[in-house]
Image (cartoon, rainbow, N blue to C red):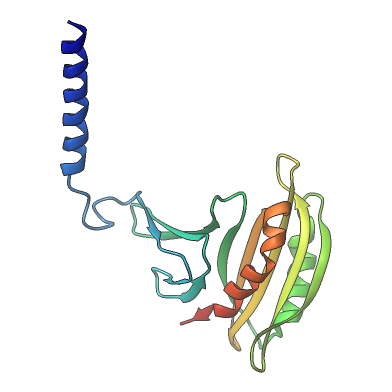
Length: 192
């Protein structure tokens, strides 16, 4: 009797797994608007689904693209899990030709310094490529739970009127040692 029950249980579980494996996945984001799609990382090139930028992600970094019902994309680039490291990219339209370091200084005084437990580490020029400079701001802060976090914000100019802000945030003990990777990601960033 027990063997019969165990056999029945195993067969029904196997049938459930087989049925799930044969269920067709949605073919397009319109059919499954709220599903997340992961992009391969291991030194792979990630292209923004809206065609705004391209970036090369080192091993351990994962790009997750969520599409809502309206077809809008929300890109989350994380290092293993969001708390370890997360990257958000913002596009800033400028009124005039502003130096990235000048914009970083303004951003610090108007936005960054209001983070809880803000502790400025650096605000300096950042070499992107031969002869091309951006800026970087680094600071420590406390998240809403009071845990020590750190942030590195890179300011990369596309042209005279457009600036991209790459903001990395994460746990102080994890993101702090990933500086070479965040620098590499910022240097690989290409606006379209």
